[in-house]
Structure formats: C-alpha cells, structure tokens
Amino acid sequence: MTPDETFSPPSQTLPVAPSVEWQPAAEADDVPDRPLTPERRLLCMIVRQLTEELLRATGLEHDQEPGRRATSHVRQVAMYVCHVAYSMPMGEVAQAFGRERTTVGHACRMVEDRRDDRAYDTFVAIVERMASAVHLIAGKRI
Image: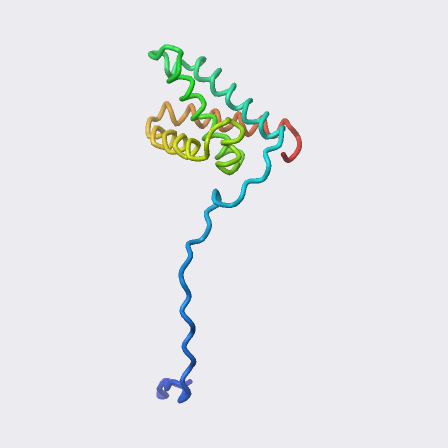
C-alpha cells in the first residue's frame, strides 16, 4: 500500500460473533489436588520441625512463652514454606498438616504480611533455603 492510498474496509459485512459469558480462569489452587503421598507429607513434617528448631535457635520469638500461639505460628510458617518452596497446592498442604485449605491461605497471608520486618523475612528465607536443600537431598521428585 502506498502512502497515497487510503484504506477502505471490505464491502462485505462480517458476521457478528456470538456472545460468550466470561468465566474467570481457574487459579492454581482451584485445580483438584492430587492425593498426598507419604513422601510429601514427610517433607512437610520435616519443614515444620526445621521451622520450630530455627525459631528457637534464633530467639526471634524469645519474648513469647511456648504455647498455642507459638505452635500455630510455627505451623503457619511451615505451611507457607511448603506452599512456596515445594509449589504444593494449598489443598495438599492442608492435608499434610491436617487443616482446611482456608487455614493454609490464612497462614500464607499472615506470613506474607510479616515479611516486611527484615529479621522475620530473613528467618523465612532461611527456612525456604533449608526446605529446598531437604528436597534436593531426597534425591527424587516427590
């Protein structure tokens, strides 16, 4: 087409496409969960134990008495790390920890919100790296 030529639409009218109702795309956590394998459950329990030991060793929560709150906090971090480091769907993480999928979502939000604190972010990053190392040591895809 030369610069002097103008574009003219075809004389024929195109058919109108039928309307389609919009459906939101399924999120990764909306897909059906695969059955939880004993190996993946074991990985989650190892991450929980690592989290508890590291929390104790760092003294990050030294002002809190051991109890229900500390236990749930350890579990929240461990669930978050399993979801992030192992790319486990929330439903699978929930199965591994004996909780509901919504509890895992709440835990992930709580951990994300606290990551603005530099010391806490460093702690979670260490747990993530250790969880990844455990996965590598396992030596197989689970």
